[in-house]
Length: 266
Image (cartoon, one colour):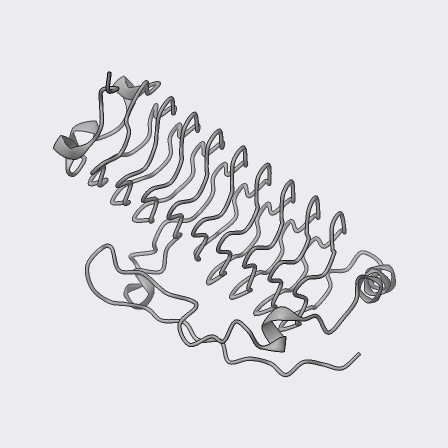
């Protein structure tokens, strides 16, 4: 099959206030064949899996957009800079996968296994991840508008690494993400973007939220026992019927507390 020409991947790091973050779509033409078509078929990949005899596949920089890869065993697969926009990965096993700088816009990963997946610089806007397992993954990327309802994100590592000053603002962007009912126990989302996220009934036990943006987020019924709220922006956030609030860390150190919604309107 004809190989599609690679695209130039452009990412930007904006140095500035805490709300500034990377925009991984900057300069990318989303209408090119490299972003919308596939250079391989499902049968091609199934043949590679059979030939690999259990070894991880190398699909780095491949154009795989729109492919049906549902249910496949892709453990440890190298998909660095691969394009998987609108791909069907429902129920696929991507445990330990390398998805750094991969494109997963509107991809369907419902019920997929992404345990220990490396997702630095991934772009997964409007992706479907409901019921997926992202435990211990590192999703330092753009998930705006994604559906992560009921997902497992235990010990997720999405916080900004401030020790690396050049990449200090590279962080998980979960703006307007549906995280209702998600398991975020022990997740590190320090300095992350969670503005307008739906965290209703989510389990945030022992989660690190320090310095994150929760403005406009819905935390109705969420469990926050042991969660770190130091310098968390809660402007416009719905903080109703919270469970474990008395044991939340630095609860008094939240920002814009006077603008949070703490009482249900009549």
